[in-house]
Length: 383
Image (cartoon, rainbow, N blue to C red; front, side, top):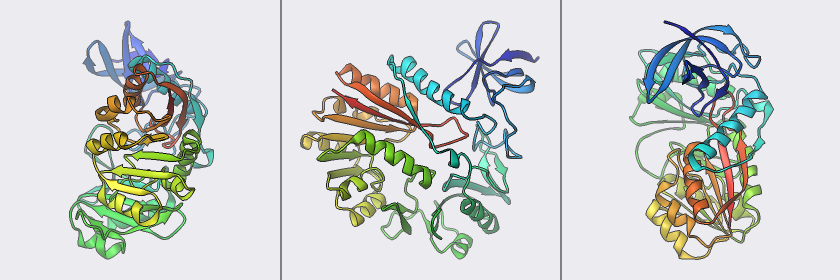
């Protein structure tokens, strides 16, 4: 039986939020200002989860999504959400996470690039089976077949067509150079048809001979992490560097291929970067004046203890830096700059730092994933 619900807010995860008979209800693809007819699909701990059956009254922030499979494909959730409302709610979601999880108040700054709301993705993982190529559906492993994606750069959409031709029968990670001809293709298992179609193809061998290219003086390594948009990465790097300032020494944890610290090393900052991804670390060592080492979180702790650093920079995965947060809180560094792709785990770790005497000096929400609910958040902590 359908119920009508007025959407009054947005939640972490991209859900619209309303109430049905006093209970909080999370609604997929709903926007603030919508009045929607919904079916309850799940109940958990007094919270309702619902799917839209009809838009009774559309939000003033709603637009027609420029994609025929929007709502089926799990690649994005907010393609029907207008700016600037989308930006305002991204900042509000970050505020809510800090307040609810960390009991911390923040007033974040906003950084975006309106010319890259569409066509910004330069890296994506495509899935192929039985001729269908695309992204997984939301909360499923059912492949939604797509001809092209409005969020993907034209060169990435062109690579998608070649993946379709190859029919690899597995997931394929593709990274394109938006200002060059490079197309990196990576799979877990070997695929001859991909090797025939893509000169810069590698598969899951842990060796040092992977293909790659340079972008903004940073190595992009096949199969290693890079931001989903090399173009928007410039925005992120600029924000990070403004929060790092001009230290004489920098410890870069979860450094990857030196994305956020190589430019500082070029400027004369003493940089030590550590990451467990060996090919990425080797590539950073090969091009920059900084020192980059292979290591995990135990090595991070040893590096924190090794000397007094002016600034410690960290860019952990979505799960955050829980394993090192307590030791990080004890450092004698002047500042900690934390880059997070998940506001909830950042808020959790920020609470540990603030309880130990740190304060949040600046918070910037960076729109690295336009038309999705995801954001990158950068915090500078000071004593």
